[in-house]
Image: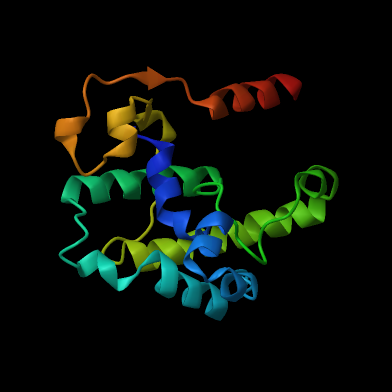
Length: 176
């Protein structure tokens, strides 16, 4: 079994959060991009999501922390769910459009998949993407694990929760 926290995937795209972009002064630049266009997506990925600080002495990403982030991202890509709540200009659509417009929903899902796979290529360049066997993943929810993936000494006792997607899959299967 592989323990993951969805927060680990969300941390990968945190720099695209509107509040973060506003705080650090790049909101206008980010909002001018269309992340469904490969060149613009690569620009954003290289500038904000795979920055040079990953090789800096000030940033400590352990091998295990990298593994946890990578597996959380693999899990989310397999489900075609966004890594986190970060804003993806040119990709995101409003919830009511997602529900009501099948074509817009499909375009969103396609664009999201392309963006996240492109991000995977840049963030985890030494490993090609393979889908996850979702049954091998556990949703670990203890705060030390979620907040400090690079510091196992801060984790504490494991706590787990059921995956919310399992209820949705069961509901869809019951409805058919």
